Amino acid sequence: MRTDTAGLFERVSDLLPPGWKPAGTADVKRLYSVIEGGPGDRPGVRRYSMLYANTVRVSRTMSLDEVLAIFESELALYVAERARRRVFVQAGVVGWQGKAILIPGSTLRGKTSLVAALLRAGATYYSDEYAVLDERGRVHPFPRPLSIREKEGAPSTKRPAAELGAQTGIKPIPVGLVAVTHYKKGARFRPRRQTEGRAVLELLAHTVPARRKPRRAFATLSRAVSGVPVLEGARGEADRTASALIERLDALV
Amino acid sequence: MLPDETLVYDLKRDKAHCLNPTAALVWSHCDGETPVSEMAALLETELGVPADDSVVWMALDRLGRENLLEGPVELPGEAARYSRREMMKTLGRVAGLTLLLPAVSSIVAPLAAQAGSCIPQVTCTSFVVPPNCTGLPICENPKKCCRTQGKKCRAKNC
Image 1 (spheres, chains in turn blue, cyan):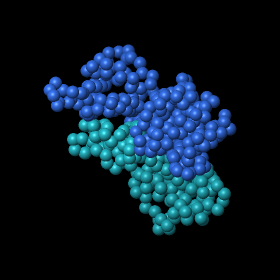
Image 2 (spheres, rainbow over the protein chains, first blue to last red):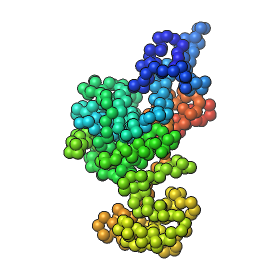
Image 3 (cartoon, rainbow over the protein chains, first blue to last red):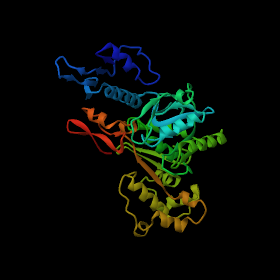
Image 4 (cartoon, rainbow over the protein chains, first blue to last red):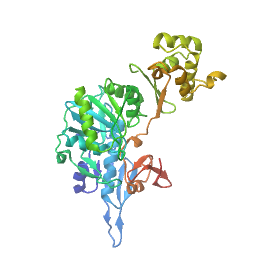
């Protein structure tokens, strides 16, 4: 990646995916260029902030923050789609007694609020955005700050897991429970148990490289849910659901 | 392959299917040579499903609808009448048997962007070229996605 101002490089570096490290070779597969806009040379003229991926202009806007937000999500998606030894599934993940609780779901389905409730209940933080699975079906941490929305439809704010009193996971752990759920006002969490096959389909529906690497996605997801209870159903308040999930997992462990 | 189910990915249509044991057994014997009556007998021997041709026809119907067979399935007049509900009425009186009726669950595999996080509307508008504006969900309105429309991206129904 490159920027046109030195100060910007540090801000951009902070947006790299968790676990990044400097490349060992000079071979550049993808080059991101972030250009900072602002006042132009002449009065009344403003320059756009822009983002390029290789030679393709991805974004052009007056707001640098917007460009940086796009850079962050664009890069995460690029990594998620092309990771060679990991399968990225859009899901929240917490650890409990050495097992992972996986909450697959797209944005605005109440995933983050459930993850936050589980953290408040003492779970270890793994991810708010992607479940990163290895070939053995274990979940690796992808601990970005949680994107919490104070109310429905509002923009999210970033909060580190430590602010919620939670520790962040370091080691990969096996999946202990999969909860396919979404928030429904007034609902009581009375989930049905799903078959492993249906669970794989549900996870595949949120798997980033599902089309690019279907064979590997199937194999990884099948291993991840093998022998694991999969619960499906609408939920009400996050705290109650978090307690119910922990109870279920405790009974199994 | 799972212990009790079979997963199939259709590379042409980018659809994933989960076949329950009955549907999987019928599917695995769709070789153009095995007669329906023989499949029905196999279902009884291997899974304990009553040897009834209509169960096989129902499975073929489900598999055909999901394009999991090479050619279209022409159901005999009588079999065409059977719906899953009717089948449950006639065969499903035995406890647990309804679980063995042929079932095929399917999903369309998502594009990478569809499985990614959402973006605000303003961000969508600031995208200038595909592929970045092809399918990312808009945070403020989960039913809308960032799609190509002219030179810039705009929200459209997903």
